[in-house]
Amino acid sequence: MKLKSRKQMRTQRHRRIRRKISGTAERPRMCVTVSDRHLSVQFIDDDKAHTLVSASTLGTDRKKSVETAGALGKECAKEALEKGISRVVVDRGGSKYQGRVKALVEAALEAGLSISAKEEK
Image (tube, rainbow, N blue to C red; front, top):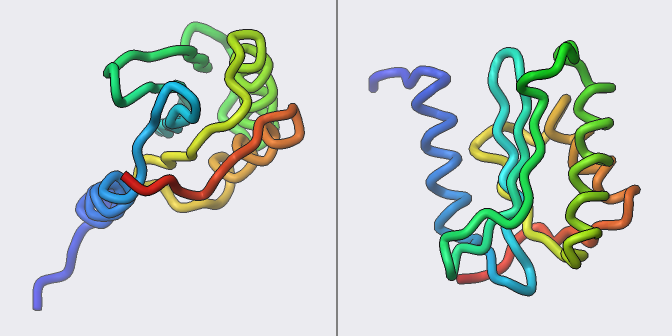
């Protein structure tokens, strides 16, 4: 049996997650993207294939840390609430729910978003 790389495992997790969840206009998908240096969050309506709100650490001098992820979570939740989005489905993009991803989602919860683990297609 051949061992899988981390990238292959993440891709496999991402496909498994995306089979189960989808965003709508009433409950968009909160897509969290994690790279080595930056974080990105998008609120996506999959029915229309349209991004409603986005926030990122790109173009800032923020360091990669759990505190930065928490600040980004509060910021993106505030923008989403201003646009009338209060309920979302989380798509962690194949990343494990720990560290920066967990801090971002929990900060968004504290800021007022209602988060569901999944929404059936």
